[in-house]
Length: 308
Ligand SMILES: Nc1nc2c(ncn2[C@@H]2O[C@H](COP(=O)(O)OP(=O)(O)OP(=O)(O)O)[C@@H](O)[C@H]2O)c(=O)[nH]1
Ligand SMILES: [Mg+2]
Ligand SMILES: [Zn+2]
Image (cartoon, rainbow, N blue to C red; front, side, top):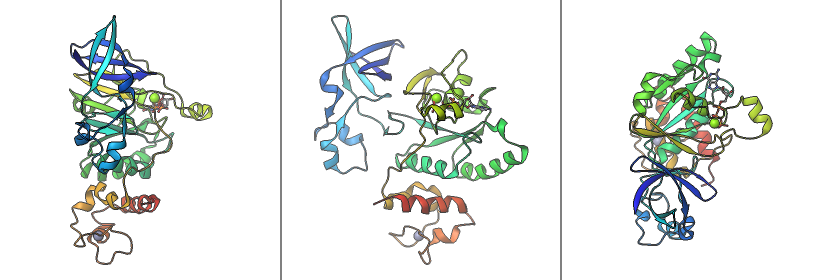
């Protein structure tokens, strides 16, 4: 028996990077392709912390890219044997055990959306994963647009999220490379934002398929179809299919926790959701001061969009 990590999967065949650094193809044995999680499974500890126990017992588990697995060899074929407990997992992108997410947002084509950015950040904060933000395609901005963009993004830096501005057609900032060392980093962002282009700029010789946004939209398809982890700088970097629509994963009452700046306000009402009509709410009082107006408005919009 030996161990490795799933770096891609394609119709039941898993590409695994072994501990020795070889890439091999594994087949899944039936029971692993759709596993019911039992009460005493180690997955219960690490699986979705926010689900109640009942959800977990009835859940099914399939291997994901990022999973640590053990495998065996039988009749010259490698078979996946066990999936080890996950440190974390996301649904979009569908991945396990990431150290960090690199959010790629384009300044133009598609235009920068602060609402979408806040939504991505909330989903990650909910899963306790910190994003690094890359604003791509800054070469398409006028000087004035770039100044405004940088001013807006300074707020996110102050929240603790590293922010980089980039033209991926010519390279990748050195500061980003340092953050990738020895870590498992997965790219996420809208379709056409430039995720695959970013990886091509990062890794010499790479030619992942990329497509002009208008072409991609005309075809009604995303250029990248599957998640794939590539070896980089002692770690792994993952390209993922982008998406045009993204849903929040949390409940109404949990949303406020994903806005890290709200926690610093120490609102004295214990169950306050810091809504527009919350009198004496410390969060609301900070809006326009220490809390960026647009962040608060996006919070309200997200709150309203949630059913429960
Ligand atoms: N000018 C400019 N164009 C860029 C930059 N980054 C990406 N592009 C272009 O944007 C288009 C979309 O890039 P992709 O890398 O295919 O986008 P993606 O995020 O991988 O898209 P999906 O795979 O569909 O999710 C391509 O035409 C790229 O050449 C950049 O920094 N500057
Ligand atoms: Mg792509
Ligand atoms: Zn409040």
